[in-house]
Amino acid sequence: MPKTASLKTLVAYLTDGYWDDMGSPSHSFSGHRIDVNLSGLDADAKAAARAAFAAWEMVADLDFREVSSGGRITFDPTYGGATTNAIIKGGTTTSATVRIGTGWSDRYGTDPGTYGFQTYLHEIGHALGLGHMGLYAGGATYDNANFANDSWQMSVMSYLDQNENRSPAVKADKAYVVGPMMADIAAIQDLYGTPSGGVTAGATRYGQGSDLGTYLDSVFAGGLTYALTLYDEGGRDLIDFSDDTRAQAVNLAGGKFSSVYGKTGNLGIATTTVIEDYRAGSGADVVTGNKARNVIDGGAGDDRLSGGDGNDRLRGGEGDDRLRGGKGNDRLDGGAGDDRLSGGGGADSFAFGVGRDTVLDFADDQDRIVLDRDLWGGADLSAAQVLDRFGRVDGDDAVLAFDGGHELRIAGLADLGALADDLAFA
Image 1 (cartoon, rainbow, N blue to C red):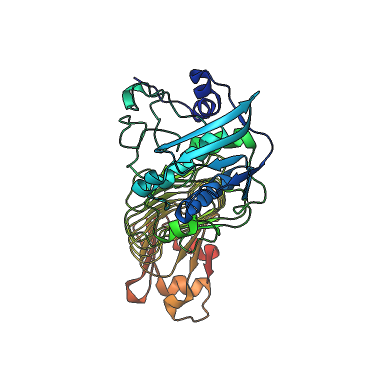
Image 2 (image 1 turned 90 degrees about the vertical axis):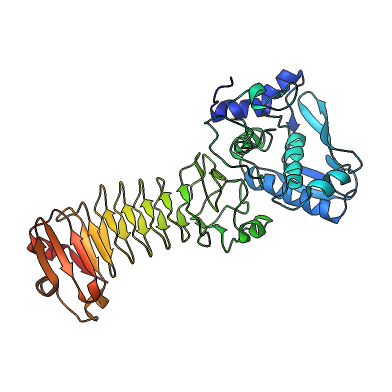
């Protein structure tokens, strides 16, 4: 049975191993500007090709220029199926012809999110020098795969969808691919380098209100029910999936997969990509941050938010939430509901303005409590006055109880007066 391979191994197979197994030389285009000729395609096929080129351009140092004659990549729609032929000299691709027949596009579609569009991504990957994820002798099945984690989840160059791969290494529902995946991104960057000054170079918004200016804006507008791996050049970035009503399981660390919009394992984040901010939807979401200074908003629902490393800001929103800051100086705000807050290491701030919250690990003279003045009508009160009017000790806990049933419990702090120099107001 196949064994799980590292990302490095998968990348090496896409760029070299497959061609070695085929008895062909590894190859790629020289330079980074590649002229492409779409003149033989109809309007829908041209739109698919342009979007697919944009997808590869977003993740590598590639500059595709459309020409009306000649071109190093050309398209032939007269072929009955889908294949790519390349002319190679000394390991350099001099030209490639992508043959995706009109009948293929009519059958499988051309819009992002269809198998037809995935075919354009796949065949352009071949034109650029990527092989398949396996030889698939006798037909593509899990039993004859080279790697246990060979599926669309890792690579658009795979022949196995996420369900056809039976390995526990692939925790993903079947979903069509709308961009290069984890192994593809690392492989194409191995051949051509990383992009510089592309559409993801600055502060980028993914999901609702996506501002990439590419085909992905329309993909995100409908909710990400497809498979996609995000590669981002830099800047402070936001993923906004706040319109998702189903439970999300999200890990913002590079090299990880997340589950959104009712699909398992459909969102990847490339290994070198840092996403700082995330907005979840109205389900019971589990969101884990990375080493950056994350801002994570759980939205409605009973959420579980963890900041990880970095000085993070966690907002629970509506629902009974569980927030953990992790390392760093974090700010935790449970929002409405009965929330449980744990700062972890560092000097943390616990914001309170509504609900019934419990702070689990308050460190006297290190952490602080930030109270909303609206809890007492906005009057200008001192810390001592707030404690005297609203505070009490309940067993081993300090409790601040306000009108309307709003209550903050600080577990393990039996000395109410110790809070006097740890209170702040907003």
